[in-house]
Image (cartoon, rainbow, N blue to C red):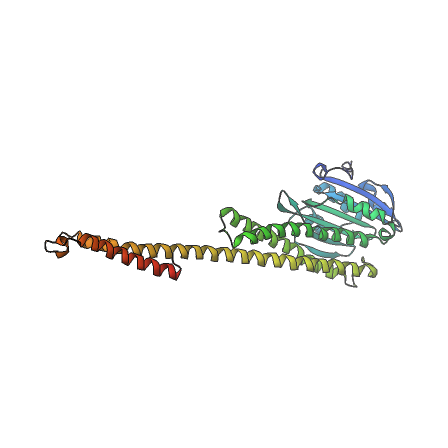
Length: 338
């Protein structure tokens, strides 16, 4: 038996691995929720589209779905594993698309994957890891029956557009963290915690860039005229997604450059502070060298030192010492060393 279909209103954390939703649509209107073993027959009917949503399915479930739509074994093998690179593969009877998802969890960026099987009369989405639930997306599509009637290529567009739109809240959150770092980098020296945060953000941005850039190539290929499963009327929509991806890439590159500047500015600030400290130490060492030298000379205990028997010798030595030290202090102060 199929895994129970999850209620669309259920929290994401309660969704169990397996079949999240399996429905069939006719000319944009929902016909029924169906069993996996009946999906192939429904997909063969004219003007019918089967949309199946899976969440971290097992190999057995994927093979059952594969038998219904004659999916390529290599695509099924890839869909069973996470950590796939974003790509689009064409087979004789369908497409296999991989996209990476991203969302914020407890202030950290978490990544997941969505694999799409697309063919005549069916779309199968396979989610792995962190991503927003597609239940809300499905409801929006069902509320736009006219658009949903365009078939499986509209569903693919809606899913990819949903994935790309969810990149921007992540970028907004990272942008806020980068702004905080940038505000403090010139006033304080970065500690170990701030440096770790900076490197974590740069790593997350790199991973996000690795999700965004290849997906542009996927959308570019979906615009091609030789992909039979994509209606020519839908191709401008994939161009729109590519424009959003280009904007996301620009933001990622800008944030990475800002973090690089922040790190370099922090290093320069730390070096300036060390230089200032070294100057102060050198200045005070030069000032203290005067009384040290004079005290050393008069501590040598020579027998013939005329100043030792002079009535005002002690005051004269103190005066000379104070005068020289004062002149040195004034010069160092004027030079900005003190």
